[in-house]
Image (cartoon, rainbow, N blue to C red):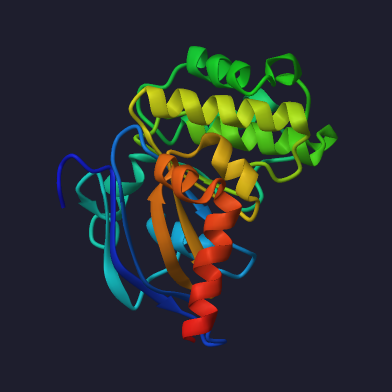
Length: 243
């Protein structure tokens, strides 16, 4: 793996007994890049992210995070990652602040100031003493996002980050992604909404039926297709014609 890359996937294949999963997925992420995985539910976005986290074991392929092999050096690889995959893993009986203090214990040298900082980043500092059980889905999502940011990760993985968020909440997500990218982190996000990815990604990949059908920089996509939705429809249409 190139030491300039934060993430490198080569020929990732993970197929489940029902035939779903992902097959032959390859892409890279460099510092500061934001890659948006665009595809419908069941297209393989979450499986790809779980494989990067070491939560599922692929049949074939390799995954490296900051040079560390996810399969053979899981602990080192995981130390570079902050993630929000599916519903945030939060304790209802704890406050937002207590949940983040607990998350901080898994990393070295994270103090209470960082907890305060990430709560401010997602505009949840005013609710830090409130118990999570009283939070809406969108508020939970914001606390989960704060937990993903707590270690100032080299790789930030966000699976459907706008899930349950209102317009203001989505604005904070975009601000967080932009700030992470500008600080040199690589960001991998997934969505089934083209507009959401178009607003914050530097490059986009179309996923459908477990395959990666096309990937390019956002600038090239917008120049060639006008918008990301047209790029998606073109790639999926070509795939169906060739099937």
